[in-house]
Image 1 (tube, rainbow, N blue to C red):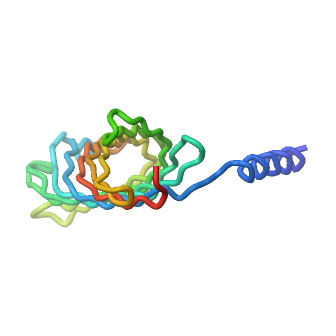
Image 2 (cartoon, rainbow, N blue to C red):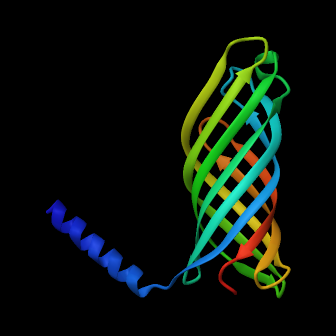
Length: 180
């Protein structure tokens, strides 16, 4: 029975995607900053620093599916009272939509699931904290088009996970593969 269900599900999914027009929409490359409240070090401390963001998006009808990568690093002001470095990266699969606010301005809210990895090194000790968890990201972007092929924008993201909830903001350059 399980095999029949898997075969039926696979065939219906393949049939659906064969009829659906999938388009490679755009690539975003951006830089920005992040802020994180470290809650896994015994005491709550804040850290922040710089980020690099890379995102690839496909469009299925009006739906946007993105594979989003973000990495960041910086210096904390008090990891366990001695200070330290904080680095993280995350991969997310996001679902979203694009809504035109004006002829030249659009908003793109996204939500999804992903993988979050952190690496902290405490100053004046040999202690390193390395953890990975499932991540639930929220992201919103405001985009504008300088031309039909190139645009730019800003995005804000919030990663919800059991380690450290992270807020990030980036300015990005967008290369449109598909003209809207």
